[in-house]
Picture 1 (cartoon, rainbow, N blue to C red):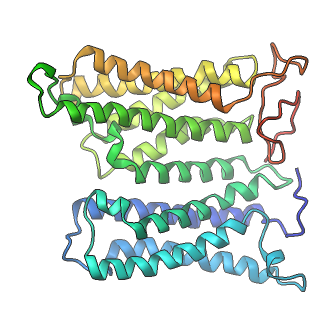
Picture 2: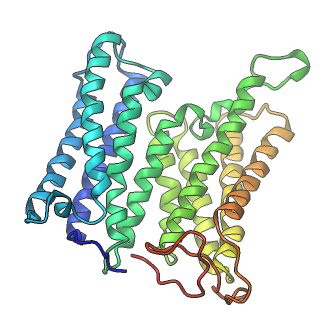
Length: 365
């Protein structure tokens, strides 16, 4: 639906350039993360090649958004200069700039982090907030456009999901197949038992991030482009695995095949929106963790966990996906066309309230 605001909408080309800047920022973030984990020492200062890649991406985005505002100057005030959907991106640019200066001061005083502290430092949390607001702009703008821009929306959501994956890497086991080789021996109160428990919890966290992102995308794009779910599941996992995992191919196969199963199932299964989600997403999750476990066992590290643990990880992840779908999607309203077909599916468009279950909502973007 067309926007009802007085701001000028961004064109598809403008959204694509913003998306490019977001990709630059995202890749710079993962490159910098790899450097923090494998190259940078605490004795190094703020001015590193890795920070240069990351902050140059921000400079590009800030200048580009500034140019979009400059082109839309008018007498109605600065708020009307901001393209529709870019309002929070402007806030994000300001927060990111403050976070960058704060990060320089922080590193000057405390040095450069090299492990979990690099993800959780207060200045990096401020940068994270700025990044979220910036990377969401292409999707927010595309969903308000009169012209469909499904892949712009999809890749914007992929970058946001990658951001969530990056900042929870320390808790996500998918890139750490070696965890499966830790011995499990509760009678001996083995020191590894706690690591195994945390790995299972991390698998549930990873599942929740993927499922929430998938539901969000499908609610906004009831007919997503072919391969959208596959890309959404694969790209964040592979970005995380490259440079941080000894077995990136395992991650690629597990996430890619799991996403593809969810993708194809969602398109082939009939019924309401909620039913299609329930019949496809948990299955894809189960396939992903089954492949992750099996491939690591056969080709990488033999599993030393009890069967109840690795099989329970798979089943609990599927249950978690099912539970999120139950709570995050409205059930068909009696008399609203529920049953077979797509009546009452609860798809959420740009201007459709979350709790609305209209028979035939107008797809956005």
